[in-house]
Length: 311
Image 1 (cartoon, rainbow, N blue to C red):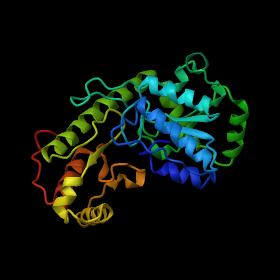
Image 2: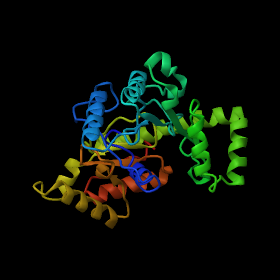
Image 3: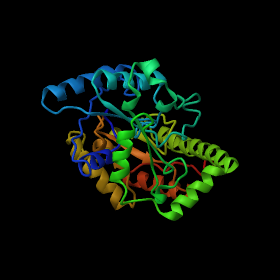
């Protein structure tokens, strides 16, 4: 999997499966979601195999967490081709599939394309038994508490049987089953909800992006998901001496945030090649979001953003 990556992937890879994660570093000047990234992924696979850790699974998070954008279709196809080339399974996390939104910063976002919509054998020369998808209502329906997920492997019945046996002792609750079934069967509500969710995501992102611009904070324009990557390098330099080590700056920044009653996670825990970035969730209720931004301003001794007319 590329860097940066969703930090809890490490927890899920290492502890239940006793597997080993092998991140693929992507240079700062290369788009990690673009075709240029594929050669760096292939290099990481070769290095790991040569060092004695044989790669078995390639992980693709689409739309990406924490980069908050969908992958172009050509990159998705390239992942499938890479899986075939190196005899790998391709596990695609599509939990943010229905959260692509437009904004003034990204008026024409890259559309989400599910790997399941591709004829990977004809279009990529890939054995479809290698393709597996994770999905669920946690993000698209704002339903993390339901603890429901889906594993889709349309051409590998043996693997499906193994997974079914592994999770037999932890079925979803009857309440979650009934609630999700009702939503999926109600086409009118589901379509309205997803459209309204995207509209609200756009509005919430516009507000946080405006806040970042006000404070001259560089950020990755988001078009999918509930967060944005923002680079706090200049903010930390205002807080502590510029010659401090980056990790010491991060520690000081986090300590100041805690003192002011707010916290956002530094992306060093995501294997981010840019160690001064933080992942900002922007989908809290408006009053809470306004308070959080003001507390961040207090933590870094910033002028308060006059946002009352924006939110």
